[in-house]
Length: 80
Image 1 (tube, rainbow, N blue to C red):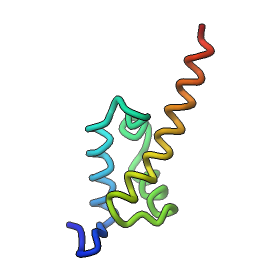
Image 2 (image 1 turned 180 degrees about the horizontal axis):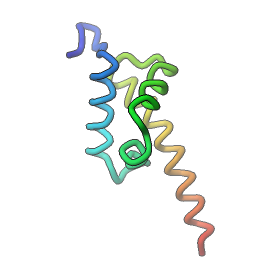
Image 3 (image 1 turned 30 degrees about the horizontal axis):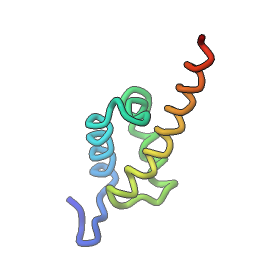
């Protein structure tokens, strides 16, 4: 549970990010989070970003997910 400043434990943040990723699975690369990221990778990413709130965690992971999605789109564009 978040404290008064909205800070969450790492386990809570990771669970909340995964929930967000499932809810947005087909948007902006969130499927990569579900399909490709291990728990320790998410923890490392969140720690490096200094994310302690859900909003900060979603922003940090979302940036990486979006990069993966953009790369996927680039690759698909060259397939034809």
